Image (cartoon, rainbow, N blue to C red; front, top):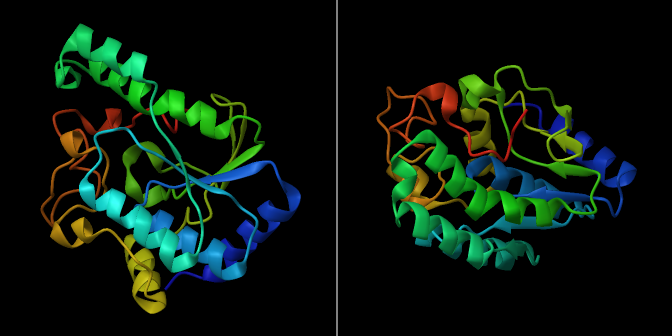
Length: 223
């Protein structure tokens, strides 16, 4: 298993150096559940937030509740701006995000990016669960980077972890996780944009599966 001490040290340093000016933005995915466990177990003053797009799997909402009860924490949930979502649907239709890459980016902007900006407002650093192994678009990521798109630093404590490292930690610490992972969903986003994958497929093959691999980002991690 990966050296958890390195990730924990990065979280401790961030909590000290950016006290009162950082946030952990969780998608409730396996990596983010690992980070939530570390933050709670170490008693770090790192607020935890998540984005509710309005089209998430029911299992994610259940996991939010389970996670809060398990760790005795309160996650801040940011919802999309209703007017922006309604404007997108009026223009493209309820599932118009599948019509083109541009339309899909518009949908992600309406449902995620506005809420992201509100979640990051006033902070100097945000913590996330990115790993280099996850996607071709993430192979050159560093643990600590300048997020110029959002005007702050971004910390990825699990950047060098493998998928096996993540699951070894989850099993060892008995971390609560989304049951969809056991049903072939290694990466989970909106229900309408996520499908199960085969064992031979890339871990993010089920995200926006109608698009090519180099486009499989929603804009949260623009570079």
